Length: 121
Image (tube, rainbow, N blue to C red; front, side, top):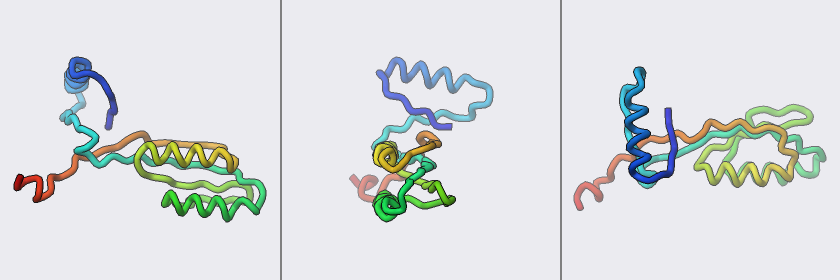
C-alpha cells in the first residue's frame, strides 16, 4: 500500500510510527519523490458524440501515450498512466470531449536504484 503525504518531519514521524504499529504491516519505507519511480493509472471513459471529434481525440490519446481499452458505439475508454500531473492534464483535456467517468488507482511508487555514477561519487 502506498501513502503519499507532504508535511513537516514531526507529523511525518508520527504517521510512520502509527502505520508501523499496525498488526499486518511488515515494513514502512519512506521515499522522497526524487528517489522514487512514481506512477498512477487512470481509466477515462469518454462519450465523444460527433464522429468529427474522434480523430482529434485519437491524437490526444497518442500524445499522452494512452491505450484504448474499450470501445462501444457511444463511448471510448482510455487507459492513461504516468505521474499525477500527466493524469490530471489528460482529464482536464477529456472534459471537452464528453468525459463521463474516471477511475484512478492513486499513486504507486518504488525506490529507484542508485546508478554507478552515484555510487562512485
